[in-house]
Length: 171
Image (cartoon, rainbow, N blue to C red):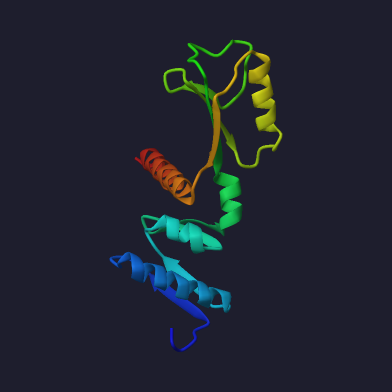
């Protein structure tokens, strides 16, 4: 790195490195990125890729599954989840409530609504309003979004399933 490269290839740079050295390395790598250095990183630490990358490539069993802008990938393949903690358990959802992605979970103590990140932003409000209109109240609400690791696992397992299916067709 002392030669001020325009492109820097890093293959598992933090594997086996202690926490302090890892932090220092990422500070140095961020500084190089800000200076315009193109950094090509291979890593099994998905959280590092999520933190650092502008573009992500996924390789499974030697095959490139995709290469995409990270933000676009997260938008296209990411899922969001709204978990609504109920003040008292439900045995079932009222039959009048027909909302795709809504399930009763955790022994009837939670409603979980899973939706795609491209959904209309007003969708959550409509879900909550529908539930409230049917007498369902909440103690607490939490939202989460799938991580790059979640997307990676989904891509790799989908790719494995598709590969297994095509092997069956060929036999």
